[in-house]
Length: 417
Image (cartoon, rainbow, N blue to C red):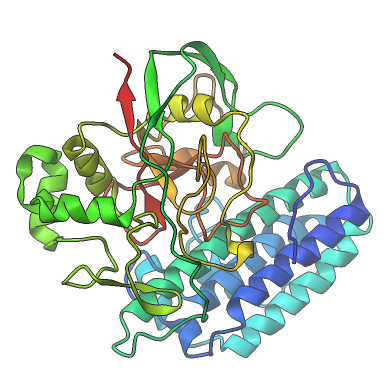
């Protein structure tokens, strides 16, 4: 099933895209029980039921209430329950307590989605430019929550002693990734940021020039086998590889391996349950601190985001994405630049901040990206939990340096000699 979102759509095409995106969300939720859908395993995780309701609230609040004459809100109380961080809209239920919400029941949340969908189809039948613009934003917002549904339920299930599978899968045939080698980054003055007609978030603009010094970036992601060598070489016991805050986190949290690996480094928890760790597959669920420490151990560094974007420009947007069904990083194969998109988000060494000349949107929608530009690092490229239509070379994801529950991996870089 495709959920491609057009950039400048006519109402008919946009209505079809709306149906496809919303249907893909339901497809992701289909394997889950009502009990699965309300568990919150840590403050950063949201219950699946909350994701299903929040994405519907987004369309109701920012589109239906404002643009559909005579629209009646499904339940006025839902604004408090399912607002995320739009303080200009009003107060909201505390994020760490979303798992307390046994009511509304999942069936009522599903009814809410149906209610919103029916009225959105009416609105989109004669949508003006602003309705189309906000709808495209809302669909991209929902695609972000599709990825969160997968990453969050993986954490939920990992905390269950039964180690249940979200979805069974067949592993690909074992391969042999090509040797790690480094490919030159275009040096000199490069144009960075989104330009053209396609959709992009405001944090990808404006286009600006950046001076890039000579550097090289690895042809593929770091593998589980390579990361295991870092562990066996004392990686988590040697402070010389770690940033000060990272070393403190390792000590406080007792980190000794990636998030879902078992103690003897032989198996990991996946969305298909416990599986043997494949040495040829990319390592994932590592924090910025771990990625940076590994890079230092490997006599390398992480890419800067401008380097990554210039290096990735022109690469095909194919890869292992959520709609491929694997839902786990797969081994690299082939020649040239590999795994640029999909498989695992790639930490960069760049702090998440505004591009020169950046201005957020006016009003509550301006809270979408800009206010988070503090204390986080940029990741690039998408993952096996990202939909294939929701990625581009300029896409800037961002998380805190200790975050590990996302499908985040490592690509190495070095300064050129």
